[in-house]
Image 1 (cartoon, helix red, strand yellow):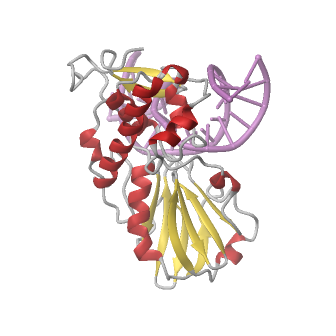
Image 2: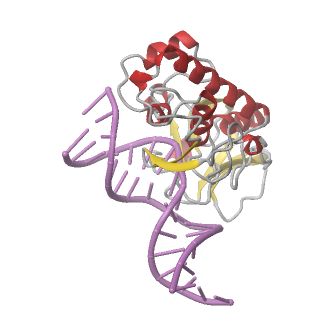
Length: 267
DNA sequence: ATCTATTCCTGGCTGC
DNA sequence: TGCAGCCAGGAATAGA
């Protein structure tokens, strides 16, 4: 069973729907309903958050950053996290931010997601690589240069590029015709160029369709995305490749389920 | 620098 | 039908 985890397009969709609904509102208090969700929060966080005015919401890779007048709220949805505005908290609500009129609910069945409150953008977020939707081809090639490992693990590395995850890496590698285990040093300018184009194409299409929903993902309005219909390899093990008809194969690369076409993506 | 294995967590799937 | 056991997966971490 494959499920969608929020990656760049899903987080982008969430941020776009959240921004106009949250900016200018005030957090009157926060209620952590699970100790796991606020592991990164310093003691006394609820007292410091209370009264904060929300100024701006932005995406940093897969992180959602809510800048307030007195601090920064950084949220990572990980596997099953959802951020919902003005809703009735369900059984899996882990953090409820009370707003002057309404709320912001962080819901997360598996409790992998995190919420943190800091004075400035956390170091971990500062350290992320460039955004893959914005990186130019020359810069992409520059960053590739001198890297030793295999292509898929590098693309999943958030310090190389921020925001790519398992689904979109598999989809981009397929479109570029690059095998996930290809050594980065062997890519060459042609395949590097195709990979850069494929990453930007896949992300742009997915953002336009408001992300992918396989089982859990919904945006801040609780709506599902539409990109799952366009998946060509992810979750398609055994199905014929749309380009050549060869059955899609599933292997494990970097401890992740990896889907590819053995004919279109030669080792 | 890069690799692998492990941990976190739990709904839903598999197999008996 | 019931129940145990396993799996997925982003990121942090430890150790090679």
